[in-house]
Amino acid sequence: MTSTLLPVARDVPSLRQAVAAWRREGRSVGLVPTMGALHEGHLSLVRTAKERCDRVVASLFVNPKQFAPHEDFERYPRDEAKDAALLASAGCDLLFAPPPAAMYPEGHSTSVIVANVSTPLEGEMRPHFFGGVATVVTKLLLQALPDIAYFGEKDYQQLLVIKRLAADLDIPVEIAGCNTVREYDGLAMSSRNAYLNPDERRVAGRLNVLMHDAIKAIRSGEMSIAEAEADAARHLIAAGFTCVDYVAVRDAATLAPLTSLDRPARILAAAWLGKTRLIDNLAV
Image (cartoon, rainbow, N blue to C red):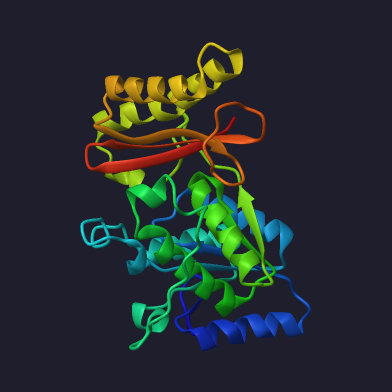
């Protein structure tokens, strides 16, 4: 272990040693997995974890396995010292910041694939993504074995994938979803928002507004689900978005398509502003 603003574990044995010491003291443990470039959304997860658990570990690992070759792995923002200071201010007790070789040592050959819930939407747009997410999260859960792991609802499909893998693999960790933290205009907080130029940032908040409009149109009977999805996509392009990957109203538990609101539902959207891809979702 090394020490900066809070203790830092660089490998799995050091992480487990710290957690074991807390366990001997009878402490409960929360885990907040991150890729760094922290913002208020991440810090709210840490604070929520601290309210429910005696000790909190945050991981910082930019996972290469969830990026396709053409995506932004190399330019993804990295500033460990800044992130460590933010985590300390939110009450984090330990930072787990392993190098890639500690997570994927030579000879690593195992991947975790979650079927069904990972297939639509992000699974169609980024077919490599959930295999990388499921693999790294499975490893983090087993490495730390916390009582509870905290994830933001902003990545709603990812949250469902993680809940499914924890249940299917009998990992004894509660998976807690936490509310999306938003900017003043409704834009969901994301590390990738830093990529937006001023003009794009002014447009970005329209994503949330148009999702709300779609929900209102469906609930009022003004539009069918399919009509509201298509209308929102058209309005996103008119607002200045470059491309819309999807606007979809889905079953909140399975992400199956819906033709009526006869069960809990979620509207999910992904759209591009220039070179930046934004995602968001809302309960319907």
